Amino acid sequence: MNEQASPYLTNCPVGCSGTLQPTQYVLPEGALLRCSVCGQLISQCSEQRYWQSMEEFDDPQGTLPNARSVERRFRRSKKFLDRIAALLSKPPAEIRLLDVGCSSGSFLGSAVKLGFRAEGVEPAARAAQSAQAAGLTVHQGLLQEAGYADGQFDAVTLFEVIEHLKEPADLLRECRRILRPGGIMLVGTGNAASWSAAAMGAKWEYLDIDKHGGHISFYTPHSISMLAQQAGFAVADIRTRGVRFCDRGDCAPGLYTIAKLAAELVNPLAGMLDKGSDMAVYLRRT
Ligand SMILES: [Zn+2]
Image (tube, rainbow, N blue to C red; front, top):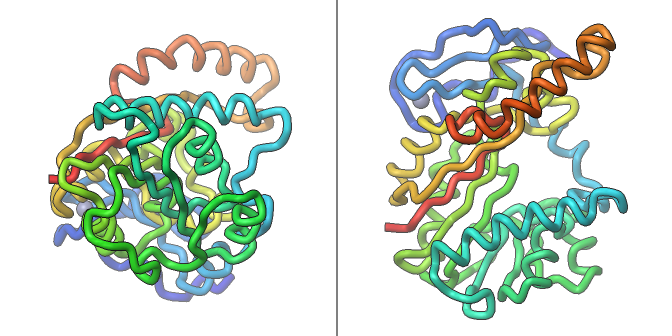
């Protein structure tokens, strides 16, 4: 890695004009920077490292869960889909849904199974082909290239996408265009204001570009709300879940067990206080 290379991100992705100040989260790419206006955390990784890390993650397996976690992943997807249907007050069969960045189609497959009229768009070729081979309707390429009509969808989902983007407002505006008025967009991303981030600092796995290719921009409930409002959405609901105080190998074995137990105990409280590490942001197109 070239330590001297200039960072890919030089401005707050939310579009703030404040300053970017170094934090105590020191990664191999340098300290994460915090936007003085919205609190967004921003990586200093170079453009070359960014694209290299993105390519490392285009494989046919994509987001497909292994056999053991299939049922758990389905239940999780169903929770999101139930919430979308409730916010739209419509049954799945009347909901036209687009999963943007659908990868190999794990979430999309769940949506189709539950009766949603769902399709996906995915730029990574191998992941998209894998989803198509599974019988799912997937456009391989960028959303902006797919040629969807204005107001074509009732719901758009965006999992693990927004933290990869230098200029997320462009994508959000395109999502808004293809959503009908009153439509719902669900954005799934990590929570930089979570207890996991506070407890684990730079060791919080979500920040690691080697393990999560392309992760360069880290949202809080506040910063993602600001971005959404600027792009023409109202926040309908924010739900967070998940707490980790340390990873196995980063603390003594006895301590790890206690930390894991403590994390499970405080998990419901984290959800109530928006301090969970996984964030689901439900937005309504205004
Ligand atoms: Zn900002």
